[in-house]
Image 1 (cartoon, helix red, strand yellow):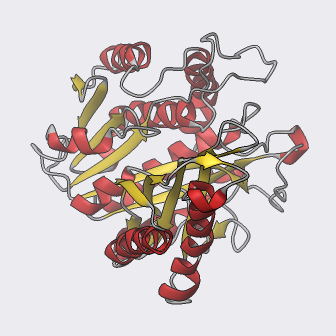
Image 2: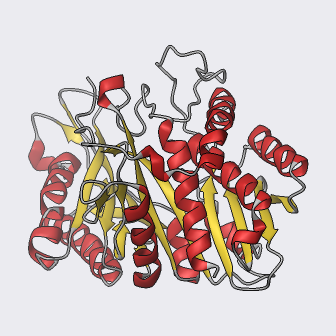
Image 3: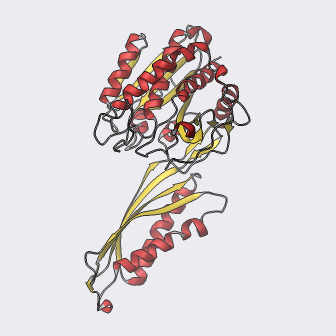
Length: 403
């Protein structure tokens, strides 16, 4: 089944400058080459080498081996000015590709099922164009090719390695090809775009026994089931109705036989929210509910809770700059989608916590070509026309910010 996305009413390709239109075949070639050689987080050796080879051919100064496989390219104009960062992630997912295309993944059990191959191609095209046209802007562009966005997270170690320093980055932008939006659209908004991602696992420790004699036991399944239900009250009764949040229990493991009451049940799940102030509230309520239900039944528990990424929060001024660029590149009002939040998470959030910036969605679905499967699906693919649009967006942001 193809994910349902409405087609854009019209796409104004004339807004993509001729020099970038000429790059389109290269963008497709780079993207497909990367798509055939997907690599998981912190294993992106082939991808990193390919990026550095291209940068070397174009005489763009760069450094590799940052946070294992990350690459940073620095492009300077002839005139001094501010520094704009552009971030692109490189990693793939542990998914077996189901597409039958000429550029199908050649790595068993690995696939670019989220568009990061396209992000890398767009960043390479942007680097090439900016290097050839340094007279059209002033200052410095630092292009950050980041590993391991899908996990365990490459942004934080790259920041710790100093990629935002020397020269210091004044602002940063990034994009995500987005099959939840049709080709010819851009999703951008100030404030929270994507949610915080937290995870938890809990073991409920009861006392097992015979299924016919429950009075001699503490039934871990009954206790865990009540915890699952009670956790739903965190959002419905503890979070303000205008603050969006999600608590999802996605794992429940218990029992080995029909007539045995299990002594242990294990549950696990994910927590999502936009408002950073909810972090401590949800965490405290999570443990309070588990502890309270266990105490009520005479059970014990072990809880492991951790945060992967904070919310992805866009700076208002940079988001307005990106939005103004989008209005030039895609036809309005159809093309710019301001209400485009998702409870998905992104470690671009770590960059945005350090410097002002904006992360935005670039519509890439084309249902008419059956290119509308959702992200992380084994048949995920996107309309490659979006690659040139991505380069145009980045280049115009550079020209508008570095004036």
